[in-house]
Length: 418
Image (tube, rainbow, N blue to C red):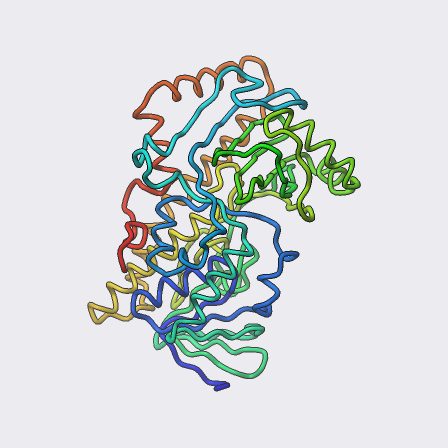
């Protein structure tokens, strides 16, 4: 392997945001190197990450253009409807209850009967595999894994990354996709602000007796949202938000006891349920970087923003970052401009930062509002949900916004090459 590599963009971080960014920039005509501290096989292992991601319908268009969607055949579950309910009782959740006021989103209202769904649910291990296989088939992308960045030099002439094996990567631009504790962001002196919620998410997969018909359920409970997200093969992905002590107790339960707790939450919604695989637990928090770029550097994904999973928007925000950056850099290259110059990078920052900050504030607000069990507050929010559910334009606006189908959409989100 050549230890000295030159390319157009060097991406630090081989998680899902990094993989998507590499594919997006390559589609825009750039040569790309991607550096990841973990071996490729580790990120694809079932035990590495038990989460599943909701892929908005505009994000699926992006996957189709990049060639990732074809590799997910049989692993992606259409989301036909989303049912949102303000819950309260700890036992027996049911459609439209325990509150009689709820909000329903239907794909047919947005994209027509038989058209695009509201999105797709895909397990993260399948997403990583599909993106990795697609990346490996691209001749203009070089992967260095496992490899760690030990030094970075950035100046007006370009950037050089030094790896722990002594190798170097030279490029006009470095893209930081190395997560919320980003080494690259800290090295650039970019500050990030945020806080931890007094919540943890317990993630598990449940096999169900009765089919889910592609309906996603989200119940807002005082401790946090309880989401049942449809997967292929009559399964739900559970995102069960609790206070840290309660989440720890759930993680320590034996399988029979955990099955009993699951059944209590499901009630008779899906018949008998049972766990399918291990459980994971993740602390929840929010974080926003002050800037998305610096000299020869751009931030994408969790290195720029991390939000509460209440609306399933985290990964989609990272995908929109990747698609917008591909548009900006592709246009700069075609115009004969330096892709690492701050002029195009500031355009990328303006494009993405507003949208991401708004979503961060909105998810934080929803979590605080629905975690409040004071009677008058509960009545007001129930009435707001019911009113939104009765007003077609408002309902469609929220559905399109969740699908990434509002505002200035990157070309990949329109199903076009950047």
